[in-house]
Length: 274
Image (cartoon, rainbow, N blue to C red; front, top):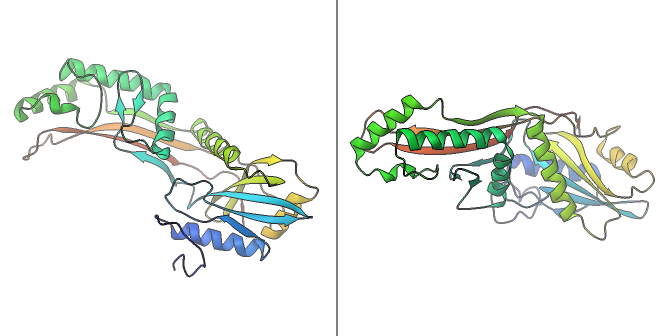
């Protein structure tokens, strides 16, 4: 079904049916007194994914929700990063790419392996190379010479991996990222604000801001039909960054390099279904 059938005003961008369904489900749970201040926008960079204001004992309480379809959801991906020997950058920054670049630069393994691969390119391919990026092999225009140089690189380098990290440290990057965005987006007229992470039908409490009115969380839990909302802890995520040589087995195109980065959830944290 569509966003229009759900009675939602969706911005002119991509939306996910799962996000719209989650919005509709929570709106129904919270009841007619809940007003939406943010609606699903799918892959847009708006924050939160959706949110509601409810009234508890005369106090305005805002519920911010970051939604992902499941515990393996992709948090970000990129195929245009550059590594200059010291740091990663992207020539076409977006909020999502900027966040991913920040995580890559904070990973000592990622930076260390970037330096290793850059050194190997200088040693085995061409000493004039100054950075790793998708168009880097263009320093050699002759197709056959380029292939011969790449064969030396392939034999000389250890592997193409810059990072393959799967742990709670990566998950904490996501939690801190959400907290920072939440703190910037809290509405001044709200008496109390909470941030939930929703994975499918499961919700977890990320953080709160303001002084909780008496009985506020109990009232919200009652609306959602749960006894309590577990704190978001132990969230795991996986960062994978690599390069991939192309065109090494023949064909009309000269050899090239693809650069790739992917960041996704890798495990389900404590939560409660609504």
